[in-house]
Image 1 (spheres, rainbow, N blue to C red):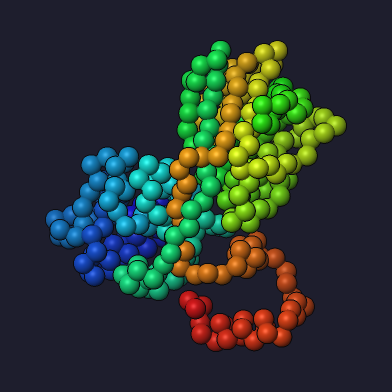
Image 2 (cartoon, helix red, strand yellow):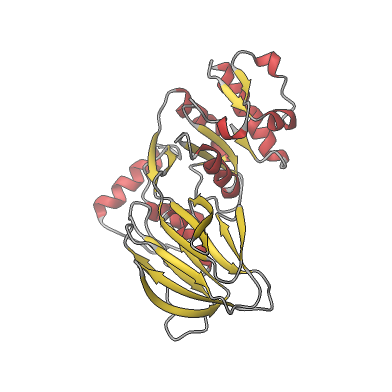
Length: 311
């Protein structure tokens, strides 16, 4: 279990989950620092409460990773669980929470679903990202949402050449370039003017940020494509690569960033089978008053509504 322990609300919800799950005999593993933040006495709950030896090994042999917080905390969990493939279940305590499956006021139903294994998991496409300098790989990582190449200084413009599938596409003077997954299409990609792509669509996205160029439009390409951004050697100052807003590396002039489909997906837990359209409407508060739809569809939605919010 991972939590945004800097928030009182998250600590309260985490304690409730911890006590309920261990009460059902489920072993809960915590990072030592978070156990201290939650003020939990491990000896009191032993053997159903244990501490992880190291963050990178925290999810080994776990059935799922329960994450309490916003999308940032879930992205942190994705980073920790990426190597093990442990599925991630997010409980939203943030604002939008696109990656989360449950809300904080559905604690009891979420606990019940975990105890009785009433959940599924789905693989989400990721990105493998490498930084090259003078022909050598100097940095490599992955991203669930996006990899963004950005200018490091506010007063300067980033000069880049972008490439798709080994062929140059265009040169841009810009604030940056976002390379995103369908999962990340509602995050930085969306803010930069990119399209929303349904999660089950396999594709890669490239979106320029404030580009001064005739051709500077968002692009959706094949999941097998390789995207590359080269920082021109004549660029004044440096750029920076951000992956999921968590991991950063400085980019000197001449750096080359390659982005391709990740070899290992991230697995997200699903408690409900609601269409992605409904998630968009709920998370963005989109106006849908006046919609009628087919009579059969209206009857089915009425039946689901009568069964309650957890149906």
